[in-house]
Length: 346
Image 1 (cartoon, rainbow, N blue to C red):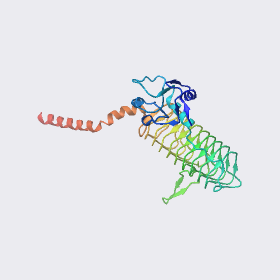
Image 2 (image 1 turned 30 degrees about the horizontal axis):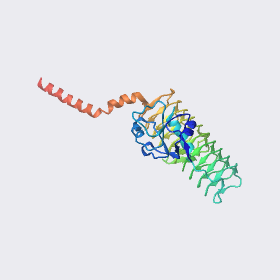
Image 3 (image 1 turned 30 degrees about the vertical axis):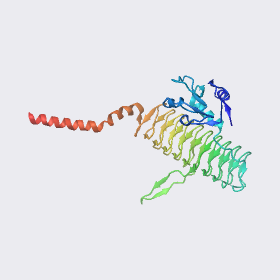
C-alpha cells in the first residue's frame, strides 16, 4: 500500500511540514531510512540521524526543534511512540490467515466453531471445545477438551491450551505458549519423596491480553489462575498456580511469579524479576529488572529495586555506597595500619 503524508497526518491527528503529497509504502528505522519509507524520532539520542536519513517522511514530536535543515517531510504529533503503534497497525503486521478448517487439521465433531474461524494444518481441537467468531489458530496448535476461546483471537504455531481453560476476546498468544499446565504442587513424604498434588483448577485469560512466545501459565490447584483484561506478558515468563495478574499490567521477559501471588493493575514489571508466593502487590507498582520481591507491596505506585527489593531511591543511595566497598575496605585497612604505627611509636 502507498499513503501520502497528508493522509498519514489525518490518521495520526498531526500536522505536515513539507510536501503533503509525498508517498510512502512502509516504515523503516531512522538510521536505515530509504526513500519511500516513514521513520520516527522519539529518542533524542537518535537526533543526528534526522539530518541524514533518506526516509521520505519523519514522524516527530510537536515540540521538536531541529538544529539544522531536514530533507524529509515532517509530521508533528503529540505522542510519537503511540503514533508509531498506529502506523504499524496501518501498514499491517499480521498476514491474514485463510478462513476455514484446513483439511489436515483435526476438529472433534463435538467442538463448536463460529463463523470466520481459521484452523491451520495439524491443529487439534478436542471434544466440547468452543472457538468464537474471527479467531485464528495457526498450524500445530493444540486445544484440549472444554476449552473456550473468544472472538478475534490469534494463536500462533505451537500454542497449547489444556483442558477447561478459558481465553477471552481479542487475545494474542505467540508461538509455544502453554496455558493450563499443572501447577508445581508436591507434598513431601516421610521417606523424603514427593507426592504430586492434583491440580484441578483452570486458567482464565480475560479480554485483550497478549502473551509472548514460550510463556507458561499454570492451572490453579483449585479455582483459577487469572490474567485480567489488557495485561501484556513478554516472552519466557512463568506464572504459577493461583496467581492473579491485574488489568493492564505489563511484565517483561523471564520474570517469574510464584503461586497464589496477586499482582495489582497497571503494574510495570521488569525482566527477570522474581516474586515469592502468597503476597499481594499494590496497583501501579513499578519493579526494576532482576529485582527479587519477598514481601507484599501495600502502597500504590511504589517503585522498587534490588534483591531483596527496597524502595527505588533507597536502592540507588545504597548502591552509591556498596559499589565503593572494595575501596572503603582498603581505606579501613590502611587506617588500621596507621593506627598500629601510632601505637607502636607511643
